[in-house]
Image (cartoon, rainbow, N blue to C red; front, side, top):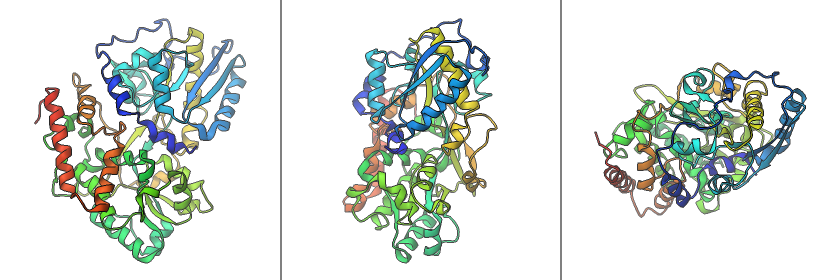
Length: 454
């Protein structure tokens, strides 16, 4: 299975999401063995006498041979540590069941994105304090709770668009578009001057629709505070700001692309497993995927040099912004033995510091100041930023509104994107009416949770 299929199937069913959200939010700080060293205190090449059999649960079913090779390399340094991998296709649902059922699932897990951050201490050990680890690693905020870091990303992503440079050239597009009007104009040129599908929605697989959620924060506002701090207090945040920015502009690009016939002829027949080879072969102009999809597209055919990556077409006060974030994060089972915990930390540290895994997968470096693949140079004129965490005391606001509104941004809210495609194609509901529905749902959730609106 392709990495992307499992990656953004990151999002579990709504029922599971609500079940986890109902857990107690008064979890104490990590209560695991206080004699454990933090990951920054461990050095590769030390503790070589440690004995442990480690089971690693992963969604990367597409590269199991490569993962086993990494385990073999680590074994050369730690001959008494054996790493075995369990690859899971239906990753989110399966791993959440592992966690909530209390079963013995193993020792290292890519933390499922569907669990609430405040539940992380129930399942995983603290790898160290945020004060320390945030100076060494990128993306630590994703699984930081009460200053403890419960997960470290295995790679980082930038959120833009994959495109075929040759298709753009044939269409007569000399520069990548920087705003919605230019983007729609570019897609129109592709439709009129080539045989390629201008924008491939990937509607049928459902989960790719969630990729649009990643563009609504930094990409559309230029603000690192918007997603977790501003949005939760905003009144009618999905209204038209009149300047082709903010979430309204993001989703209107999708609506207008479909409404103007700039997507596949039949959205119900798209196939995510084929889209990488299709864009490699010049049959697609643009795909809405984060940067993890670039390597997929490059490796899917004979034209890797035709694959490019561009920022999402929104410009804020004359500048383009790109949100970056960590991918799935390594977490270590709180129930594992002390030796297994130490061995697991050593393996995670080796993967991040010495294996080059993040680079080989086309990701942004997890290490501060680490090396990034060359294709990220296409974003050099943009500012790459990471969302700031919620304000202290408001850590749960976004999750509560997101869940109760049913919009579920980055949390299995894929059907709302499908809904946009359907109405745009049929022409039976205009875009402003859809956004009014979103505004009402958001407002109702704010009121339900007594969250003040500015």
